[in-house]
Length: 635
Ligand SMILES: Cc1ncc(C[n+]2csc(CCOP(=O)(O)OP(=O)(O)O)c2C)c(N)n1
Ligand SMILES: CC(=O)[C@@H](O)[C@H](O)COP(=O)(O)O
Ligand SMILES: [Mg+2]
Image (cartoon, rainbow, N blue to C red; front, side, top):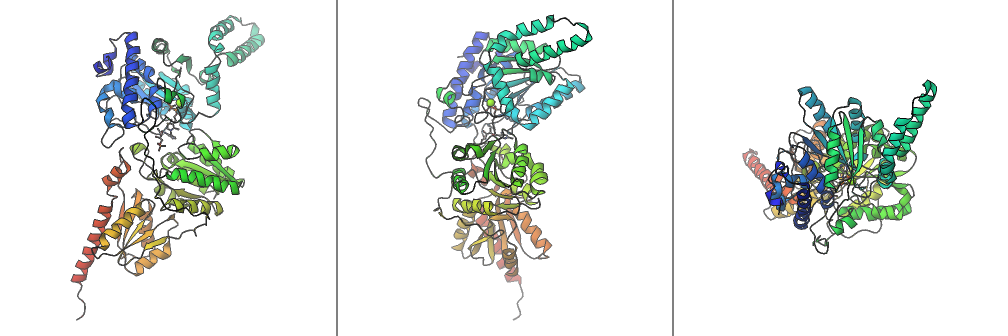
């Protein structure tokens, strides 16, 4: 076995290329075995085994900077950089992060989680290198999916202009999470599929060089002919026109060929793009056969490929997807917009039923948002289905193109709140704060799946501007579903338990915690009300006034950043109304990033638990009895 000998990347240097091939096989087997117990991003990592081995063989991490785009495909890098023995803890609380993580290793020079940042990071590192007079290599590794992200194009444009030396590895496996989309994808597929490029490329380039310059007039047409023939025949010309030397396509599972290509690239002065063809899920039949499903997978049985996912209640995502099909059958204006997350957003049923009304724009949240505004302004009902965390990419488009235009865009914000194993880069905890302060937006969050369905109906019937509903990466509560969907009056909260002295104003999944806490302290003589704050904007101002008039002590409980979310809105309301005596306690997510683990562990880490809410109620009650005892009532 070669793998146990690898404690650091330099241990590869003494190995023969045959050994590297054997080592790759051992790494592949290691990943298949480890992830069968932990789950994780199996298919992306199986696709980059040889690529990562060859990179660490040829280059000197961390001096040479390997920058993994998204970072979900860095398990092999982690194996080779001394973290093999931590894979049993992958994506678990205090365990190995599923993405590149600087506090794990000096070899992790750039963190991600969100797509399409590697080229910009590479540009920064190359500029810094040259300004410091250093000569290390800068090597961004970007997938064909990540290349559809707008940031990648911004960076390509700048890199081509600056002509800084770097080697961009384009890992082309024809897949995003789902099959990749877009004109760039088609272009890459053309290069990938037309093998004649490879054999004709040298002939064509040789011929072009032999066309003599015949006088100025003809010389121009000669160079025009060269360019047009080059456009037709030479692969990667798009990149070459952007100022990159294009090398490829290279078989990304052939270590000798990869090493040869890297040597060629090292001799290029400016930026070079090495186009590497890989198979997502390579070497494990179930993952190769369905790399979409095996992009991110739960624990499984190796022999059969049977996924061991607990059979239980559906996710909110599934209810969203089903309900959207119901609504779209009644309303032809409904179109679904997804930035490369059709499956994760539950839109596969919709795409099967209404293929013409399903728009996957690739990893392009900004484009998706602005395009949705235009769809709405043309009288359609665009459902912008997006994960909370990825929607952060489109903040300006939400302000500038959707809300300012008061466009009837419907946001279906999935993964709202803690997301568990993906950790800090994927937590959906900022959208309340960054959306509620934008004029014209209505923001909802359901207490259960039945209310989500009514909110979806509410959004369709609402024609006064943008409206959003956010729901968690969770299983549903398990309540009966009403057949008849009825719009909810905008800005109305629901009193679940009458407020006497104390009230918990809670949103979404926090309602269950609020009710359990209220029930727990009730046995101790503390009667706490529970209010379903199903509208995060606008607030139910009448209910807030009533609570103030009755001198109710309030806890605002939300699985969102405490700064700027609903709790802040309640405080602002009372301040604006001059109701300065109202006692409001905020229980939300503190001002720090919460790392990977289970959702319950993340909630416990920040105190969003029944125990904590109960003890908060007890201390409020103790204060009241203390201040009561101190009050000198007239005898
Ligand atoms: C801004 C953003 N949007 C969406 C995602 C979700 N996402 C994670 S990986 C991925 C596909 C990446 O495809 P590619 O770069 O080709 O890598 P592969 O998995 O094929 O190796 C997507 C869409 C993300 N991480 N970041
Ligand atoms: C790497 C990435 O960003 C996606 O694969 C993400 O991990 C999907 O998240 P869900 O598992 O919540 O769909
Ligand atoms: Mg890909």
